[in-house]
Every structure is written in structure tokens, then in C-alpha cells.
Length: 265
Image (cartoon, rainbow, N blue to C red):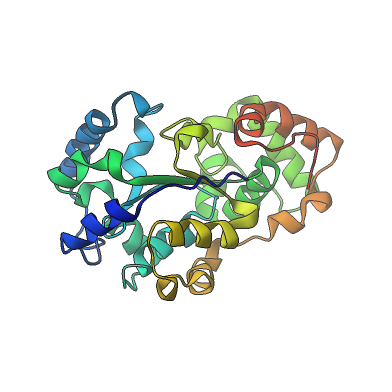
């Protein structure tokens, strides 16, 4: 997709000179999160498109990175990667909590504009199918939203439900744009889910992360509990009706993130 080069050497050296080791350290205090969120908005100013997603930023202060988390877009894998490049070995939930913007001090928050912001974008067709296959295998989601059989007929029923008001019920299948802090062009990098390893490696190297610390295979392996293989099952689950509905419901994501709505794969 899009990969933007940037000059980050001086900024990263300055951050590292401040003695920051693994930034993923302490539990979230919800009051601190709200306070940090407010200060982050002030720091980033007019750049912010949507305020709510700032609460879910995953921050690595050692290399000056801010990851805008989007559910079903290699989210767990990327949070684990942000932990591991600074020597951490947390599990997924610990890493999500410890990377929260709520752990930042005032100085770091005031310098957020100097950090590199990145996001992972995904083809809406595979993202919706992945959310369906993973979430509706769990009783928690079935109890809350209804039961859909994990086959093409069940997927058709799910997509019709999305079209009839279910779209905004949960972030795992809601629009990616709603979970983005900025317009796509305002990120330092937008990484394609479909070319994740190559683009992520190139981005981290350009941000000053030593190659020896970039273990994409290990992070991906730890995050496989959410893997559904949706990208390889599109033609099995989609028919003309489901493609038409997803295209219409997610057209803004298709257009803003550079995906062709007429191409299923």
C-alpha cells in the first residue's frame, strides 16, 4: 500500500538518550488515561480527526512510535511487536494495557507530535469475514448479537444484519475510519495488512529499530489465537449479494484506504 519515508534518526537518538528502556511497564489507571487523552488532543491539535481512538494508542517511547490500533488488522500481533522491540515478553493483554497512552508522563505526551504515527489498514472484504469467523465462534458474541452458522449461509445472514443496523455494534467489524485518529495521509506510515511483514520491517528499520530486535515471525506466532485464514477463504464465503452489501456499507474504507471495491481478492 503506502509507505512514507521520513527522517527520524535525530529524534530517535534523542529519545534513546533519555534512558527509556521498555516503555511497557505499569498497569493502567483509568483517571490517568482520561487525563493523558485530554493532553494528547492538546498536543496533536488540528491533526486529530477523531478523538476517541487516541485512548487506544499503543506507544513505544524508546523509538518514538505510536500505533493506532484497529481491531482485526493484526492488532494483537502489532502490540506484541511494539513490546518485543524493546525487549519485552508480555502476553497480548498485558502488552495492550502496558502500551496504553495512560502510562505516558506529561513530557512524552507534550512531544507526541515528534513521534511516528502508524496504522495497519486491511481490505474490508477479508476484515469483515475474519471478524465473523472469529467472533461468532465465541458464546459471548453469540449471546450478545445472535447466532450465525459459520458457513456461507451464516455469513450472508451476518452481512444482512450489518446492513440493517449491525454495522456500528462492534469495532471488530465497524468501519476502520472510525478507529483512526487521523486522515490516512496524515500518518507517517499506513501499513498494508496484506503485505504486513515486508512493510512493517521496512518501517521499523527506518525508525531506527535494530534489525536484530525485529522478530516478526515470533510476534505473529503469539498472535495466532485470532487467526481465521479469511484472506484465503473469500470466494468460499462471498456471493454476489454479500459482496454488494459489504461494498456499499464499507465504501468509505475502500476509497480512503486505497482498496478496489470491485476486486474480491
